[in-house]
Amino acid sequence: MVTRACDIVLLGPPGAGKGTQAKRLAAAFELLHVSTGDLLRDEIGRGTALGAEAREYMAKGELVPDALVGKMLMGLLHGQAAAGGCVYDGYPRTTAQAELLDNLLAELGRRVDAVLYLAVPDEAIIGRMAGRRSCPACGAVYHVTANPPAAEGSCDACGGRLVQREDDREEVVLERLRVYRRHTEPLLELYRRRGNLQEVDGLGGVDEVFGRLRGALEARHR
Ligand code: AP5
Image (cartoon, helix red, strand yellow):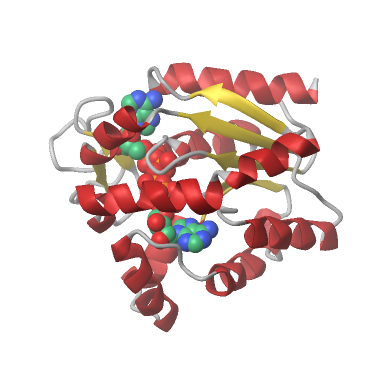
């Protein structure tokens, strides 16, 4: 078990399982799960101006501008909920975002302690996203075959109606993968050079992958 405030970045292509695993890591290590994708979907759901702007980019599979996402993150990191450390899921996605995260954490006397890269090949990603179903009410994520809910179409956690994400259409998924390669993949080299990148095989069952991530983190903090 990690015993001090700890900040962990979970990197990986869209659909790699970051959200699924970040929730588990947050629960196991008592960290706040920070998903910029979930935060943006929440803004859209509440009909805010930020949400309306973000939706335009998200629907096309493009990145929301750094400044908009950064503002959201800034508020969150200065809050009490983030004081014990966070698992960042979907942030950073550009080198400018990586810099902002470093600066925000430095202001709090913290740093990125570990970067876990969830490696999943494109063929598996397409299948994972095509079968994903999410609960807009509580954020739970399922897969029609790999991680199905007990009753089809209904969330186990809150009974909400499960939906397919607007950006999980095949043409948008392909654009998201292109955007990932262009803007986010270079971060692997950045963190590798710093010596805090650990690559974890993201193939296999959800429990199996979680065991690998947990093992990688515990090995660092031993
Ligand atoms: P975001 O929501 O962050 O999407 P993403 O990074 O593309 O990742 P996903 O949520 O699609 O996948 P995931 O890796 O979390 O996988 P999951 O666990 O769901 O961002 C969406 C959009 O918001 C972006 O395109 C962008 O426009 C914008 N945005 C967000 N952050 C931004 C930022 N920082 N800057 C700018 N723009 C930003 O799993 C996928 C499926 O696989 C599920 O069905 C799951 O049940 C299943 N699954 C999980 N693990 C396994 C397993 N081991 N075996 C089989 N199936 C599995």
